[in-house]
Figure (cartoon, rainbow, N blue to C red):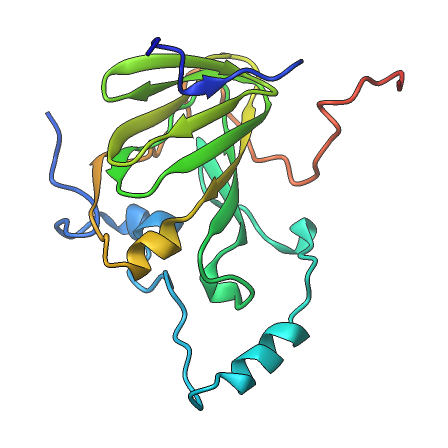
Length: 212
């Protein structure tokens, strides 16, 4: 298997951190990924034939407006969580948008579940278990089970975006609970990225400005 096999090309000393960590500093406690009250799998309660749950599911909107879902965390790595179990529409998968400031990197961590990163724009690379895999807009980067990984924006001047799809809720439901953070998300912007904020409005980065 080649070193680049985890990126599918498109056409165009560590502290003890994580779920069982010691008390985090005040600033990190407010970040999404450190929320002690996150809902990973929704409770389903009621009569045995779950008729009420089916009725509820059929009443839930099938289109979620990105403009109504705020970015969280930052200042170097932002997330916009489109779908997760707490929203009441899904139970087995989680989808979110990641935006990395110019030259930024994500937290370094590992978990049991797989994840697929569709790169919307930008250039960067992954480090998976010590091996580097480069990517650019249009590629899909795959994080395999139990892989210690970290995401990097290689461009010192432009941000990068990835749409992330993972079945983490299903793994947790099956009691595959292991997750560990080796290095937390940075709390400072990289040099040259001062003043960066996540782009609230999406643009058609994958479409030519002059049309087809």
